[in-house]
Image 1 (cartoon, rainbow, N blue to C red):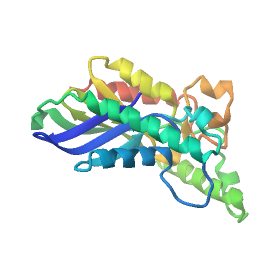
Image 2 (image 1 turned 120 degrees about the vertical axis):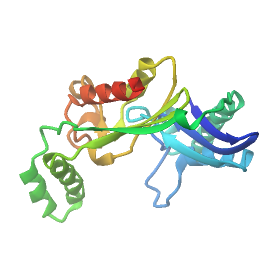
Image 3 (image 1 turned 60 degrees about the horizontal axis):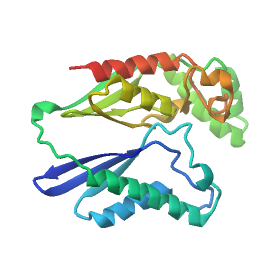
Image 4 (image 1 turned 135 degrees about the horizontal axis):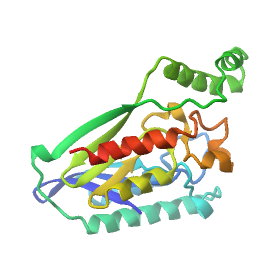
Length: 243
């Protein structure tokens, strides 16, 4: 499901924002920077509507992968890109224009304290940091987040309001259940989501996911505790219910 938000000046499109929840990778570690399939899809749409700026946001795709397309095949990358471009096209074709006033445009944030994963040990991370190995890189990331939490620093959840549209901006490699929950909280509105806003958390699973196993909720992959679900769900609800 692709969500599209576009901005217009009369009949002239100015910008198109697209949202899609999926790991934005079909294959990787080639040593060559590239935008993978979302970037190809965005480029295709940019050529179709060149007068507008096209910006793509990854949704809550922490536990959603490219599936059969993620096999390292160059052909599959293009195929997946064209499927996403097709979704963007079909969303574009059913665009509903509406006039909004300045009073209907709003940006607000909510600062939340995310619970630190209990297995993150500051002393061990500092020791690993001194090893000077590949493990030191991961230790540096995790230690930075530990120190942030201990200093009481919070993470902002953001929400853009445009008339009856709400776009949530969330931290980390978020599980898709959060995005689905946000849409269910306000079925009367058009709700879209961009994740990955602050990657200090790394993966953010649902509470039950931490007991079910899987790479995304292992100690090497997630820096937050299972109770993070309650914090984020409450935060999204407060933002979406705000007047």
